[in-house]
Length: 375
Image 1 (tube, rainbow, N blue to C red):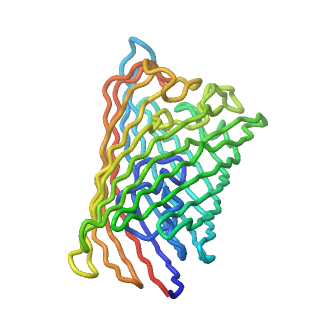
Image 2 (image 1 turned 180 degrees about the horizontal axis):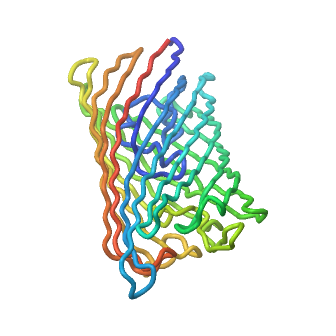
Image 3 (image 1 turned 90 degrees about the vertical axis):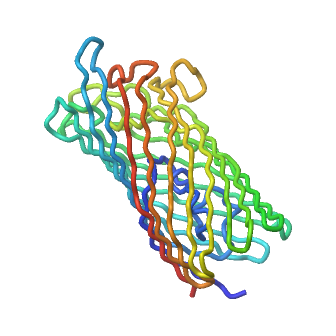
């Protein structure tokens, strides 16, 4: 079998995400060759891919600064830009791979009572190594180790200016496991990525930082020679992160949040399940679509994680729809798609650090463009 070299360039829009696994979980992507999948055992054994992703989201949030006051409003614009490079090299019954990902998230928030925007930047660079083993012709297992470097440049309070910004850097590490079993036209996968844990130095003080873990299952079925169907289920797991504790700005000692002013820092994703399909219109042209149901909770108590106290949580559910078209053969693929999601919540269980929440609305749209070739 000749060796393949895949090179891809993509422009994509996704919901906000925290870690690599979360950023790349899309039903549409189940059909495209990629090293950036949730289950490391589902990777191709000979693959090199480069991808660039871009997403945008607009949020509208209203809240009360204090009980009895008039309602205030915040409008946010969030932009995510990802660069990813990865590959798998076959070793005869096994494969060894490496991946690099860099995400730059910018937040621009405007408080109705302030004439200036709050602008913040968050960067995460993820490095990982994958090792896959073919236990049998049908069963493959995989182990992945990843190390992430983070940095932030934030205000953390709507009424803090550039003269009192907080900047910090940190590192985290973690691991993941995966299995993939092929039974004729059906592939069944299971995976688990433990929560990442590390340290960050914030104005000379060491903080324990974490990122959520994910685990779940995937089912891919070739129903006919021209129809593929995929179903995916994911759950998130959390550990306490000291960035959720109370903090103050370096100069004027004002109260801030170390995750910035983005209200979505309080939204914890808990579960997602989705279905995707790919239909071959011709031997080279394919229509694709996916529907994902996302569940999460708003949690404003930094001492708790989802599941600790249902009374302190406000549930949020929303759908994400993707549709697109792909052109591909054994040596080339090109894909273009569109996505749309929206979420809304009008009643919150308890007070947030921003005040008593009134309502929350968020809309996200984006485009996906991927190009690849085998040489």
